[in-house]
Structure formats: C-alpha cells, structure tokens
Amino acid sequence: MITLAHVNKIYQIDGEEFYALRDINLEIKQGEFTAILGPSGCGKSTLMHIIGLLDTPTSGTLLINNKDITKLDDNELSRLRNEFAGFIFQQFNLINKLTVLENIMLPTIYSAKKYSYEPKTRALELMDRFGILIKQKSYPNKLSGGQQQRVAIARALLNEPKIILADEPTGNLDSKTGKNILDLIRELNQKEGMTVVLVTHDREIAESCQRHISMLDGKIV
Amino acid sequence: MGILLSIIKTSLSDFDRNKLRTFLTSLGILIGVSSVILLVSLGVGLKNYITEQFENLGSNILIAMPGQIFGGDRQMTGGNFSGITFTEKDYLAIAKVSGIKAVAPAYVKTVSVSFEGKTEIGSYYGTTAEIFPMRNLEAGYGQIFSAGDVEKRKKIIVVGPKIAEKLFGNMGSFVGKTVKIEDQGFKVSGILKSKGGGGFGGPDFDSFLYVPYKSSPKINQEKKFSVINFQADSETVIDTVKESVTALLERSYDEEDFSVIEQTQIQETVTSIFAILNGVLVAIAAISLIVGGIGIMNIMYITVTERIREIGIRRAMGATRRNILSQFLFEAVFLSFIGGSFGLIVSLVIVFIGSRYFPLAIDLMSVVVALTVSTTIGVVFGVLPARKAALLSPVEAIRYE
Image 1: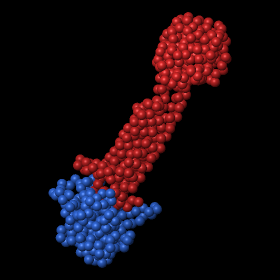
Image 2: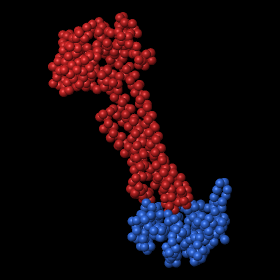
Image 3: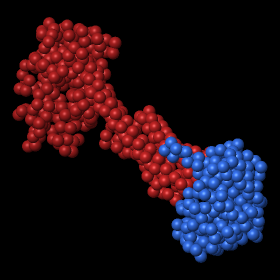
Image 4: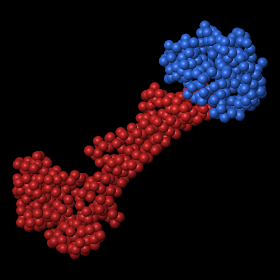
C-alpha cells in the first residue's frame, strides 16, 4: 500500500545539514497496525508526516498504491490528504472557533469526493459511537482532552480514509483516557480492517501492536 | 464550484464569529477612506466657495484705486498707498470712455451710525445707483435708490443686511424710518439681500451703508472717491478699457499713485493662496492614507499570521493552496469592500450635513484614489501572508509560532 525507498529528510540548520531521516526503507501493507517507536527527536514524527503527505522527503521515493507521489502536484496531493489519509495528532489540532460538528465536517469543505453517504449523517453516527454527540454544538476548548481526541478521530474518519495516521495520540492524555483512545483506534483496525500507523515513545504500547518498528537518530534499527 | 461556495460560506460564518476582528479590520479601511475624501472635499469646497463669491461680485469688473496693489509679478504686495483720492471729474470722465457699461465710484469711510439710541460702527459707502446692478445687489426689503434719487440729492440710505441686523434686529418694518450718520438723518429706502462672503479678499458688500454720493455734503464735502468701480461691456474689451482709463487717470495723477486692476486679478491672487492651502490639505490626506494603509497592513498581517496554524490544519484536511488563497482573498476583498463602502457612506453623510455650515464638495478623484489605495493595501496584505502560509508544508504551518 505504502512503500518508502531510500527516503532522506534533511534540514539546514545554521548552514549545517541535519538528517531527520536517513535512508528509510519501509513497506506498509493494507490492514496492518504498525507502531513506530523511538525516543523524541529520532525522526518518527517526521516519518509519519511524510507517509501522510504533510511533509515532503528531501530525496528518495514514496509510493502510495504504486504511484510515485513525489511527482504529484498540489491539487493531487491535497486530494490524497483529503480522501486517502486521516490524521490524529498529539495536540488534537482542532480549530477552536468552529463547533465540534463543524470541525468534524471540515474535510467535506475541500472534498471533490462523490459521497455514497450523507457526510453529516456519518458525522453524527461517529459522534454517537464515540460518545460526543451531545457536544456537537460545543467548541473544542470547552472539551476535555479525551473528548477533543475523539472529535479528532471522528474528523479523521469522516471521508472514509484508507489509512489512519496517529502521532502520539495519547501523549496529551492521562493514562486511563489514553488507554480508551488506544482501544478505539485498535478497534478500528480489528473490526474494520483499517490500516493504522501509530507513532509512540511508549515501548509497552508499541509492543502491543501487530508490528513495530524502532527508530533512532533518523534510522530504522 | 461547490468547493468555492463552501469556502465563501466558511469565510462569512468566520466574520460572524469574529465580529470584533471584522469590525477593527474594516474600521482601518473606513478611516483611511473617509479621512482622505473629507480632507479633499474641504479643499475643493473652499475653492468652489471662493470662485462663487467672486462670480457673485459681478463680471468684467475693474477697479481704480490709490496706490500700487500688484507688484510686477502680480503678487499682492503690502501696497504702498499714496493717499490720493479721485474726484467727481474723474468719475464723469471714466463714464465717457467707450466700452464701459457702468461706473460706480465710492467714498468709503468708517462712521458711527445710530438708530433709536442704538449706535454701531459701519462703513459709509457714498456711491451711485449703478453699484447695485454692477455688483448684483438686490433689495430684500424696500427698494434700492435710483440715479434720479442721486441727482435729487435725496437723504436716503440702503443698508447692507449685516449692519441692518445689528441696528434693527427684525428688519422689514424699519424701511421708511430714519437712521443718523454723524448727526445727519437718512431715511431707510431699502435693505439688501444677503450675498454672503467678505473676508476672503473681496469687499464685504453686506456691511456697507449705501448713500447717494451727492446727498451728504457734510460727510463728503469735496465729493472725493476712494475707489472707482467700473464694468466693461464684455470680456474682450477689458484690456482696452483698462488702458483707456489708465491713460485718462495718468493725466491727473502720477502713474505710481494709483492702479487699475481687474477683479479677476484679485481673484487669482486669493485663489493662489488657497491653492497652497489646498496643497496642504491634499498632503495631509496623503499622509492619512499612508497611516491608514499601514493600519490596514498591520491588522491584516496580524490576523492572517495568527491563523497560520489554522491554515496548516485546513491543508492537512485536504485544502489545496488555491483553496486557502481563495478563502483569504475573499475575506480581504469582503473586508475592504465593507470598510470602503462604509467609509464612503460616512464621508458622504458628513459632507452632506457639514456643507450646511462649511464649504465642502466631494471630489470624485479622491473617492476613486482613496478606495483603490485602501482596498489594494487591504487585499495585498490580507493575501500575502496567507500565500506565504499556504506555501509552507502543512506540518510547518501547523507548528508555526
């Protein structure tokens, strides 16, 4: 489904080259639940951002469904972000001036997708499923961390993505809420066969996943 | 198309949610636009007012007066007044010059005038009946005096409305009563309609006390005149008339002791002084446009910059660069349009109300320039930072501090 070959990500810091990612080769298959494990600064988030098309590699190739995405233009990349990938961030990244429902509906604004379902109905179903239906008219900053992350997950799922990319989704939550969120993501993988890539620094969480990759200093070890 | 529509809907609901920000941004443009329009309208209004005042004073008018009024380069100098006066003989000679339609000599003197125990200071204006048609003066109450009244040495007076108001208060009913100037009684024949003006370089015809020049031997014993107004038949003969009258007066006076000037010369001088004032107003308008522009620039830049993270989130959700630009372009155009229109409305209202008390006139050019500059700044500085943000990768935008 996703193939990375010889991917490098280099930042220029004060004229010196810094390798955030160094010669990454990785394949992610459909239906897999992959955890990327490593200490902070090891490049795991950068890797996830590149897989999710939020960032571009400096060199190397990234194939999604055998298509080389380094050759796509902004419109095609945006469409993949919109329809192919769903993101869950550590910081939730909700827009505070939009209501919960409007946040969840955000991807529909930019979508050229032909919906086989009514997006709003799906949004309400997802909220109901995640226990946040009564919060639909609230604003995100009035919600608890766990609730905000549920909103983010509902938003990620709205356009029926092929893959869920979760960057430290439990990082800002207490352990009990974190476990709930994790169970929810795991359920998506197990019951719906959703492909999931999860970034974490928690070995225990990583080892509980079907597959885990360890990273250190920009390399897979 | 559907995407563009939902982007516009998003922007509109965004304005609704951020009323203060929307208000402040539009306010910057509003102030920029209206201050420019108002300042320029003040300048244009003054200019129109002066021109109108002079046109009101009659056309093709020349004035012979003592001293040198204009230096060689037509600047109004301090004047070296010679102290000569003209005579009745001069007046009658000028009246015979061909190309002259009317002559109104005048003896002007500051006098005290009293009515039923009330005394005011006024300007005595001993003249002929021709002063009234020449200067477009009309009676508001009673009537003006005639050439016959002058010849008959009638002790009558036509009072300018300003001095009349001071003397009589309620005017009309005082026609026919008697006022006293230096112990001589004059029957009020009429009170003039107000012309306004005076003070901008032209004589203030509303403040004079018009008396037939032959009627007051005590005040003007020798029938001297301090000034002779005369009117040419048409614009084409003004120069010839001016030369003839000058030649005529040179027979009796030294050429440096008097001048014959065209009223338009005075008008040009006054207009050139106001052109400087107008220039200052335009400069102030330009400065306020710059200041307003910087204000618009700041608020646009700040509001867009603080939304870079939001831009990142929207990009992560599938917004293209073009989507982001459309959204911010629409917002900037909308805000500029709202601010610009309200600025225009505010200045139109102020000009409409203010013009009752002060000369104000809308200048179309200033409206166009003010609107164009303000909205251009608004749109450019609304879109530039958004463009910068849209060019970042979504992750960089989300992390932007």
